[in-house]
Length: 124
Image (cartoon, rainbow, N blue to C red):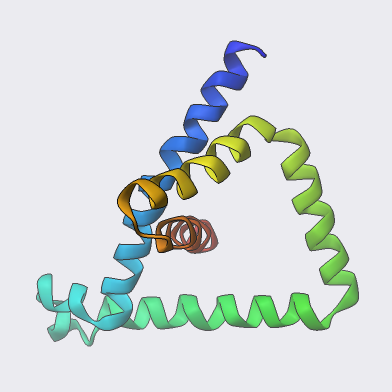
């Protein structure tokens, strides 16, 4: 195990709180709370509309992957390659969520942080 692996592992661990923050941000935007906090309701619910569009396109992407065999094969091929290249990061990511969930007695933490990270990466 090299220092690069250790750094990648800790990057995976640190991605859990970041994912939780992003999930909370998404929840605030989709509910309209962020528009209210930022007084952008005057701007026609900007953040809420943004989150609705993200959700719509994420749903369409998932539906396409599930219904199109070629897209599904490409998706799983990419996941397999990514997992092979980022073993230390994924190990840290997959271990930290459940540990934090058990420590806080909140089993949703692992799922919420993963969804937050995925939704953020889709936005980029």
